[in-house]
Every structure is written in C-alpha cells, then in structure tokens.
Figure (cartoon, rainbow, N blue to C red):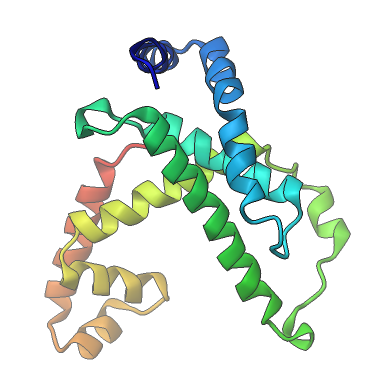
Length: 189
C-alpha cells in the first residue's frame, strides 16, 4: 500500500469521526473487494456467499468504528483481521446452531413479532456493540465478588439468599449492590 493510500484511509477515518456519512460509504466501497476476497476463502462452508459477505461487512464496520492508529497497525491490516474474525465467528455460531436437536427448538409465533418492528442491521450492530461494551465493563470495572453478586441478583435471588450462597452478611451484599449501581451510572454507550 502506498503512502497516498494510507493517508487516504486516515483522512477518511478522520472524516468518519467527524460524522461524514459519505466517507463511510467511500471506505466501505474501497474495502469491498477485501471483504469479497475473505468471504471467498470460506465458499465451501455451510453459509452462502451473500451471508459470508454480509458478515464481512459487519466486521468492516466494526473495524471502522474501533480503529485507532496509535496502536501501530495500518487500517488495511486491522480491517482484514476484523473482517476475517467476523466471518469465522458467524461460521462458529452456525455450527453450534446445527447441533441443536430439532425437537428442542420451539417454533416462533409470527403474531408475536407483528407488534415489534424489526431492527435494521445498523441498529442490531449498535445493540451488539452496547452489549459488548457492557460486558467489558462488567469484567473490568467490577470485582469478582461484585460480578458474582450481580449474577445472582439478576437470577432473582434475594439479598439473604445471595448472602447465604456466598457466605457473607446481607449488609455486605447490599453494599456490593450499591457499589455496582454507582459504577453502572457512569457507563455510557
């Protein structure tokens, strides 16, 4: 890659950070052949080419949103890794789903979804990013004890049940819940 191409990527990424939608389209267009090439490596997989390309594009969007040039890698390298990882993740998910016995899958009622608008690919991507950010925060921002308290609390256990399971006093559980709430108040997505 020439210095002009590298500068071009950096300029486009700078424009994207400033809210330029056209720059996103230009960068996606520029790397579409990379997405196609990576998807073609997995053409003999159980997923169709269009699905592989779609997953690759999701990986490219993730690369665009998370790239930081202070890490020392060129955007093209980073994007290729993100695209490949996204495709591989989709293949792993597909493999897990095919191993579920059909008798354990409950059919979805169509009328259940009639009242709920479908999420766009962009909204779904943003939702996944938010969940990912929350997960990262929980593992990095909370202590092991706080994580265990939160897990049991989410499962519906009372303070007394949690205290009994963790061999702590209910006041320690209450204090942990209060610390978790304060830490979560500072989280933004």
